[in-house]
Amino acid sequence: MIEVEQLTKRYGPTTAVRELSFTVRPGHVTGFLGPNGAGKTTTLRMLLGLVEPSGGTAMVSGHSFRRHPRGLRHVGALLDAHDVHGGRSARAHLHALARSNRIPRARVDEVLAEVGLTEAAARRRVGSFSLGMKQRLGIAAALLGDPPVLMFDEPLNGLDPEGVLWVRGLFRRLAHEGRTVFVSSHLMSEMENTADELVVIGRGQLIAAESLTEFAARGTAPTVTVRSPHAGALAVVLESEGAVVAPYDEETLKVDGVSAVRVGELAHEHRFPVWELATQTASLETAFMELTADSVEYAAGETR
Ligand SMILES: Nc1ncnc2c1ncn2[C@@H]1O[C@H](COP(=O)(O)OP(=O)(O)OP(=O)(O)O)[C@@H](O)[C@H]1O
Image 1 (cartoon, rainbow, N blue to C red):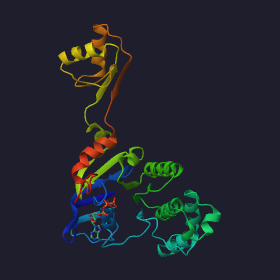
Image 2 (image 1 turned 90 degrees about the vertical axis):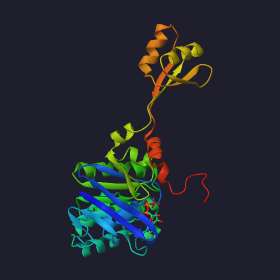
Image 3 (image 1 turned 60 degrees about the vertical axis):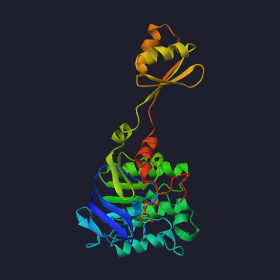
Image 4 (image 1 turned 135 degrees about the vertical axis):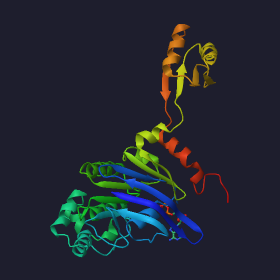
């Protein structure tokens, strides 16, 4: 379990994280979402004891890592896939980590197999690895101590589609095993099929902490699209029912304020043929952008 309470981090005049409180429960993949510069990396670094908070607490399994560094058996993390010694082989890198954390050497081959790094890859210098292979190595290091809590900072960044599918499957399996899996991203589209719980922050502050389903329900009300050869006459009927109707083209209307069922019933009552009837819910991406609009550091078109 991860518990963040009134966590604050100031860098001179910049407040990177401001009185942030949330809990991440085991058994779920929890997405940690926020626009660039929202404070995600700073929060993860405080949870791992790499950055001293200016205020509040950041606890993993009931312990503050700053005061009690507890090693890879307690929490596994991938912060920056590039942050490895390029001159070593992947296996030598994992052996060194295993040794300093008193983890049996045999575990190294287990995690190499788990992340799909072949024998040939394990012998290569890490400096020659592609980003995807470095990500896999970073994930192998996070899994080395078989920890109950795992944190990943932007793990899908730069992965090819096959890599993304693999990482998603891995995260789900880790959560299914009862672990706490906390995954940061600045893209809702990445989290949509990865996480089932969300912690959303903007400018260092909490915006939402809820399930993906609850988050989706925050989006704007659905719009109904209807296509009929009598679109004009149908629009008059719909408006008399209180709907807000926007003609899309000669045959198509975008309708707000009434359900698709009601649009279908009214068309039927007035004997208007209907060629198409559909409901569009705002995408999670739209809901995310609406919620974080005020927190985006540099919005498109903004000059400062
Ligand atoms: N060591 C530091 N010194 C000064 N300011 C910092 C430092 N680290 C982070 N910041 C500032 O704190 C804010 C939050 O940064 P952070 O990297 O935690 O955000 P993030 O959500 O991880 O963003 P990104 O997705 O861009 O990595 C930013 O404004 C950043 O410039």
